[in-house]
Image (cartoon, rainbow, N blue to C red; front, side):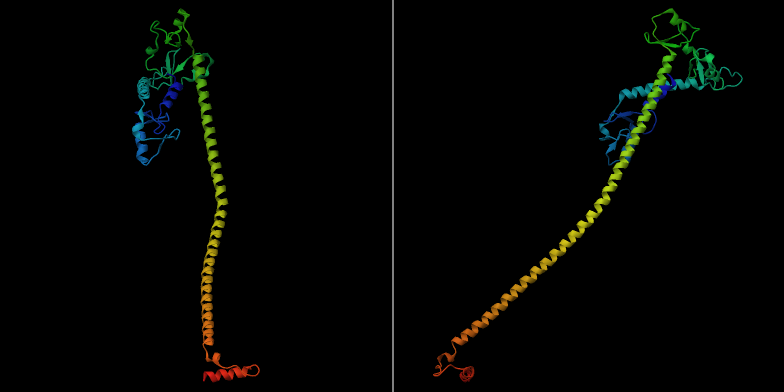
Length: 311
């Protein structure tokens, strides 16, 4: 496994919460995966829900609805075994060019069949004569890379037809081998790195666009709120004036009704007085008095007659 491929695989098998290799992976309804322990911790801290995916922020239901990803769990376990084996192999690999002191190896040259430290590997990286020398992670035992058919040769190429590693002599003995050369591996690594860089750039652009959109939404909200505040103030003033008008209208209506009732009572009293006077005039003895024989009675005569009748 190449370093770049190993790094990409390890990154794909990393939990987005704990940033470590998956432990008991659980697949959410959105398709993303998270460790069971991380999922339980999220739910403990957010018991009221809803729970959201740490990758896409999509909400999902209770923990009983989250199923275990058995296929991914098997891949993670296989990756851990390979990683542990490689760590054991590279743990005590020392530079073959430093016999007096044990210096940990940095790379192993498959063509020279030696392990080199950071100091001695500089020649392989800088001098043109070592251009065709493939460098890999330190190998604890080069016998693992020996060709089973040619013991003095190292496995350098991968045959796509037979799907196995072969050495230089194997390539000469048979023309049916479809070799995946070091150049294709380098090109594949370069393409992978380019795609990773492009993907990171797209992620950064999406994040920037999301931030700009959120800022624009916030700015529009801030513009709407001040415009709505004067409108609310005018509404309050109009309502207050309307209540004042209703209050005075009600008071005017009550006073008008009271005045109308008082006027009716006054009119009834006047009518009653007029009726009483009329009745007194009709039944008064003056009606039976003889009229004056000569001329019309003057006012003084009427008063004297009235006083005499009353007395």
